[in-house]
Amino acid sequence: MTKKDERNNAQASGGLSRRHFLGATAAAGVVGATGLGSAVMSRESWAAAAEEARNKAVIHPGELDEYYGFWSGGHSGEVRVLGVPSMRELMRIPVFNTDSATGWGITNESKDVLGHDNTFLNGDAHHPHISMTDGRYDGRYLFINDKANTRVARIRLDIMKCDKITHVPNVQAIHGLRLQKVPKTNYVFCNAEFVIPQPNDGTNMENLEDHYTMFNAIDAETMEVAFQVIVDGNLDNTDADYTGRYAASTCYNSEKALDLAGTMRNDRDWVVVFNIERIAAAVKAGNHKTIGDSPVPVVDGRHGSEFTRYVPVPKNPHGLNTSPDGKYFIANGKLSPTVSIIAIDRLDDLFDDKLSDARDVIVAEPELGLGPLHTTFDGRGNAYTTLFIDSQVAKWNIEDAIRNYAGESVDYIRQKLDVHYQPGHNHASLTESRDADGKWLVVLSKFSKDRFLPAGPLHPENDQLIDISGEEMTLVHDGPTFAEPHDCILVRRDQIKPAKIYSRDDPFFASARTQAEKDGVTLESDNKVVRDGNKVRVYMTSVAPTYGMTEFRVKQGDEVTVYITNLDTIEDVTHGFCMVNHGVSMEISPQQTASATFTVDQPGVFWYYCNWFCHALHMEMRGRMIVEKA
Ligand code: CUK
Ligand code: CUA
Ligand code: CA
Image (tube, rainbow, N blue to C red):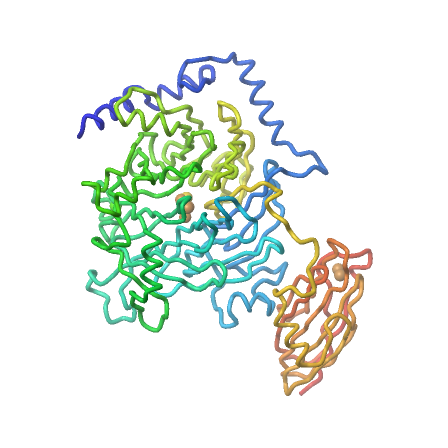
């Protein structure tokens, strides 16, 4: 242990024990930028401040929220849109799941995205991130990973629908995902978590030396995988810097262990730093290989490579977060009570081999409490780290932690706030961009226990809203939420520009238009049945409260595709189409075309009806499919 480390440890254990802190906070409420006891509010003024904070989160009927929040839906496979600070759920965007309300997974337009041969009914979404230009959210796209089936999806934020899904080859379980911030989001960086045999074709299951995982970059426009980088160990979370040149990922399994105890054997695992410039240059120059049938360029970034550096950090690190001033990567220690702060301006020297030790890029390793998982920022120099085991959020000052590590005796902890319970991610407003504004903090707690009315053995999670605009964090809202948002992102409402109705030339239903043109049908006006062997295409319009056709005839055994074009132009007049007893339902929003294909096995009369309430005569919006005996 160095002198520096000794002082650091003495500071952390002596001066800042959790018990001491809890006691002080409970007694009176502690404020002040210099830490404990510098100014003590009366119980009354503390209560008044808390009341004021809570009132800020109240959005009255008819008023709009200041922020959009996009939540991952965890293993529900969807994305949810909330208003913040009200925490009202505004919308659900089905992505990796099947959705009865909108027809996601049922319609041809969704199958164009999911793949018509898609057999996956599940997904596991963790990390939603919004595209950026020059380090600021540009509101174009949201990207999200699917750990369950090794995919990455893109959502268009104008229509709030998923428009592309990429299956990442050669790897298993895409987990950590972040975007290149500067000059703009050209790459989506994503980590494959699990180490697998290469090739994984059953020929190579015993020799662990040939097993590895990879860091992946996806082209944000084409959604093709641009390159893959072989690494030592495994990969957990990732983030990118504000120069566009570096990305960094945590590894919790440097041991490449297959068992739990094995993954905890080393006191230090590492952060892998990726030199994006060098990797992109090598790929461009053709200095790469490919694996199996996949055309994706692969470079080797294992120890000794020019593409990566391995920075040892304690222990099974999890979250990796870039500070909004662009100065630091922060790796969260999980099994260590510390976070490791990496100075990004030392990475050039690290890659040029000018440092004697890779750990020379670490400028502080503050002790925060038990189970640090993720860190977020207020743009005023403070960081907020979730402590999973302590069930707290620690607010701490980055520059003070660095001074402390350098040997000055300075308290860097500002406050610890109890949360309920066992927090994973936390996320402050605009925190991943240059515009981090330090107003709101969402803490995504994994357990809710006693916080809500019980609803059976399965409990909701608890997303808590905390006001961080002042010196003191104040808890203002509990938000029950279902299976299991890992992460969220908060953007100013002016940064998102949703469409009110569809544009008729929207590429989302381009394939319907292509088919209609082949059939000589005009989607906007024709109501027509086109027979093509045993394939029948039924084109109809809809205007509240009627379909363009109240009856169509097909034959038993036909494969029927119904295309509906909603001619309503009034915002919010969405129609539905549900074919009874055929497993078909879908949304058709104003000016949208939607289609679904199904087989008619049974002769008889089958009603179809509108299932999105659209009019006083919504119940009457219906028609009959007449299936003649074969
Ligand atoms: S991970 Cu879930 S709590 Cu998938 Cu971002 Cu850390
Ligand atoms: Cu159309 Cu309900
Ligand atoms: Ca480990």
